[in-house]
Amino acid sequence: MGKPRVFVARVIPEEGLALIRETCDADIWPAELPPARQELLSRVRGVEGILSLLTDAIDAEVMDAAGPQLRVISNLAVGVDNIDLDEATRRKIPVGHTPGVLTETTADLAFALMLAAARRIVEGARYVQAGRWKTWGPMLLLGQDVAGAALGIIGFGRIGKAVARRARGFDMRILYYDPYCREDPAAQELGAQCVDLETLLRESDFITIHVPLTPQTRHMIDDRAFSLMKPTAVLVNTARGPIVDPEALYRALKDHRIFAAALDVTEPEPLPADSPLLTLDNLIVVPHIGSASVATRGKMARMAAENLLAGLRGERLPYCANPQVYEAGMPSA
Ligand code: NAD
Image (cartoon, rainbow, N blue to C red; front, side, top):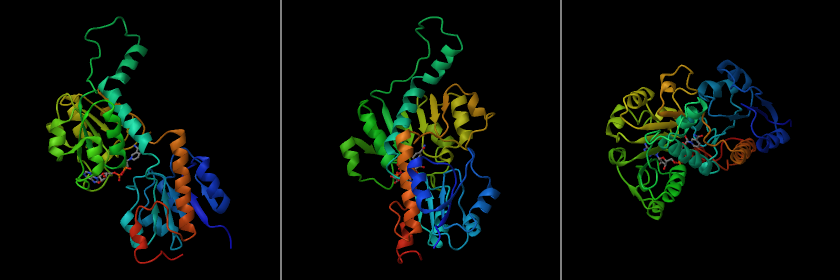
């Protein structure tokens, strides 16, 4: 029997790629940009496995284009909002993802963005680069204190808790909103208080988002949410762009209804160079680098490869985003 054919949607770190090359007939998309839709549809034809990235929309059309022999989709991300999970589940195709290994790296970035926005670090660096630094100024680039401030965490899962651990070192008062873990024992350990979303928005000096993108969380931060925030509030989003309504964000920052924001993720993504958001001094945008450390990307690649290979062997994926596929027995091998 020949090696199983798979499509790998981008060059990923060698930790994962080497494993895939050993056992598969792998078609690896070589370009920096993701495959265009038509290219994706044609490349997946006849494959047994797809290793996708969050930039690839994997829906019924892609699964149809692949054909009925498709038996695993492995996403190089913890979030799986780019995949039609219900459709994959209906077809009994397990979907792999990479939880855990990127938690600390993403929490580091969320905290870095929080500090950078609060203390106007990017603005300050631009000011110096532009040759505008003439003297120590008593009113120059005044920001907000992080130490001792109130931090509101929306989504108290792995990354939300990792941010809370960092916040303890800054003596922050920690509030969280997460309807799915009201009684979380970790909250007590971290001194975090469970509140409703409105209380979190009203009382927090810093708000950081760590929920998955779902129909419930899409545009969760809208005009109304901004109207509840303090004028000194700083918003950080390292989860998924569409959780924040970009037009409402623009209005809130432009009118100084909040102090600042920092985004690792945007809607749309990437943000077009002529986006009005990029004209604002009180917004920092970085290009979706939450998990982008050498070590973490290596671990993610390995994990995604292991999910892919397990699926090809007809074994249970080590990290499966739709474990329901196993409920009525294993998917047909
Ligand atoms: P997780 O599943 O451990 O945590 C998500 C938490 O959100 C859970 O506790 C869940 O109960 C909660 N939640 C779900 N729906 C909610 C809602 N409507 N309101 C409030 N809380 C809700 O996931 P995680 O590993 O912490 O990752 C969180 C998200 O971060 C991922 O889904 C992904 O989209 C994003 N992420 C981004 C990057 C990046 O590169 N920027 C990296 C990793 C993860």
